[in-house]
Structures are given as C-alpha cells and as structure tokens.
Image (cartoon, one colour):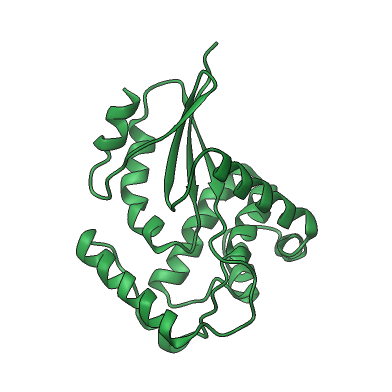
Length: 203
C-alpha cells in the first residue's frame, strides 16, 4: 500500500507561517483522500535570555510590514515591540507545542494557534514561560504537567528530532511543505494567497 503524507514544517513564532495559516487551512480541507497530514517543528532560534538587538527588532518589524503588503489581511499588533522585551528565542514556543501534544494530539493545533494569536494579535511574548503556561491553562491542559515538560530534556530531545527530520526531508525555509509517496519526498511550491498551487501538485 502506498502511504502518502503531507508534512508541514513550521515554527509557531515564524511570521511567514502566520501569514500562510489561512491558505494552509484551506490546503488541509482540500486534500485528496488518503493523504495524511503531519506537522514538524522547525526551531528558528534557540533558547536565549538576551534582549533582542534593536537592529534585529527593526528588521522584524519591517518583515511584518512586508508581509502585510504581500499577504493582505494578515494582522500584527506592533504594540508588541513596546510592551514586551523581545528575545530571539523560539525554542520555548516549539517545546510548548510538544508539551501540549503530550497531553493529547488534539491539543497540538490549538496550542500553535494560541501562540500565534498571543504573539501577533495580543502583544504577548511566547518566548516567556509565563505566557506559554498561561496559554496551556486557557486550553484546559494540566498546567503543572505542562510546566514540568516545557524544559524537560525529553521535550528538547523531541524538538531536536523533529528539526533533524525536517532538514532530512529538504525543508530549508519556514513554512515548508513536503509530500511523501512511495518512499520519495519532494518539497512543494506554495503561494501565500492561493491554496490551489499546493493542491494541484497533489492531484
């Protein structure tokens, strides 16, 4: 039997992944029968307690503006840059997706969305443990267990496995889409406005 899968390689704090979210949801809804979906965390930036340099803050704000030009309708709350203390650190957010998934696969996608909404719409910092633990509570997770697993070595090891698998599949950017069929893997083209670009390659 030919197993077919579509792998989505992403980081919950990747602004381009946020911009791609509406099209990704349409791709999932429109998939041909028999293709299973999985998500892999890419891990954009390792743990850091250092403030983000002002130059990098300015660059990321420019990226947000560029996304709004290229993908109309994508919303960002620029108050984040005044209200929070930005750090170049996305591993905590990635590990939180794993910690949520550990309590049930049905919590994976809601945690990803909660992180994105907190970061991009509510000016809350998903690099901070208290933000992530608060989101876990909002989702009805066991927050004590979540808090323990957030920095557990096993959770970091799971993240590193996912990052390594994404690289082996050829994912070099976020987001990346990889279609696997019959033992072969290929990275798909996609468009930030048109789910048909992906779906046509799967037809």
